[in-house]
Image (cartoon, rainbow, N blue to C red):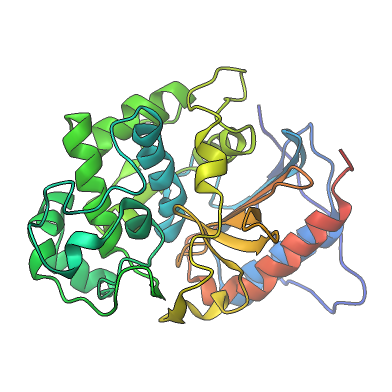
Length: 344
């Protein structure tokens, strides 16, 4: 249970200050890290944020967990592109069950009979190298508000590149992938999410895809919900209570840089230096063999989940704002948390 007490502490040498008190709560199992607390309070004051959740765990154990302002453990907020990592898990659950294949083409799936789109694979749909022209979220909502609408239009969509040759970040391709999941799962996306991930993890009823931004950006989740998801990913399919809900085999398959040879176009501003992309998430760093070592899925509204596989560190920052406004503070917080994390 989270108890409320004022988080005190400062960050000397950084010149950070705030002029108003911010309601905050610290998990009793977690110590304060004054440098992190100072950066969070400074971000709230500088950008007028309503609230921030910050969680850091090493080997599944919290070493920082704080909730500031209006965001509490159960506060449900839209997480934008942090949805993609969760969508990848649901897709991979059907790959593990043998109902889908990452190398399955859209021609094999029966979505198109001929043309360039027929060569697109499921893996390419989930890693932004499908060759489909990416659309802005508002335009996507108008044209392809459901997975079925995107799948029906696949043969008529504009192809911006040969599949596999260009990395262009967007959400339309994941709408098509979601339709394949719905077809083999025999239910709509949200129902399959509840059945295969949300209910086994004990996620709140509020944790679901909303009516906007599609599968790639429409997830609504609370800090507690996303922490449970991130912990399950860190444990390769096992919940915090020790129950396996996804096969361990899906994680090596999805945690690879699948876009190393692709030309990069239309990247988010904060992504230029990242190594690549896997099934639904960014490879911030990758090993020589393409294995992703630091994984993340930041969203445009400021949610930033990150997993360092080598040190078994999971970090979650959540806010309802614009990521470009807070990215400098977020990267500073991630750096500090990574530096002070206990050694495994």
